Image 1: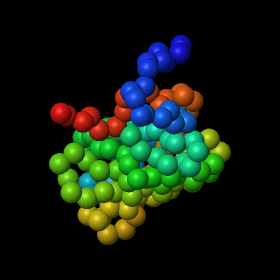
Image 2: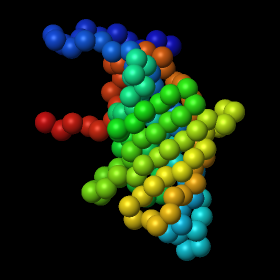
Image 3: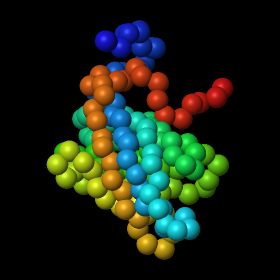
Image 4: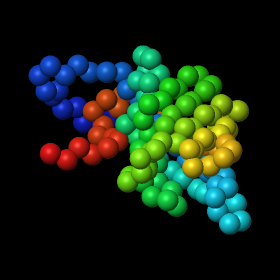
Length: 137
């Protein structure tokens, strides 16, 4: 199924953007006892420079937004920030086969936490898909 094409507003240039799905778990040391927390979501990638943004993740703690990242062939890095919090959590992942593994760094936790995820290309031409933070006017 194709995404419907709508005319772009004057002055807006089409960009080469892809949409990815992400699902997995992270090890949360703040739980008692520490344990894995499942998550799922999506993010957009500018295929020209690998910039990651306009994404969301949902987990046990609520909705968070993915921004300020970079995706290369075998590496992914992005910041995740929950609604209502004033700090970001940094994720750094490396591709291992078809799974991505790595760590997250939070200013609220003393040491990095483990992360494991499956990341899937959903749409090659996702420029016109609405994603990320909703702008209220």
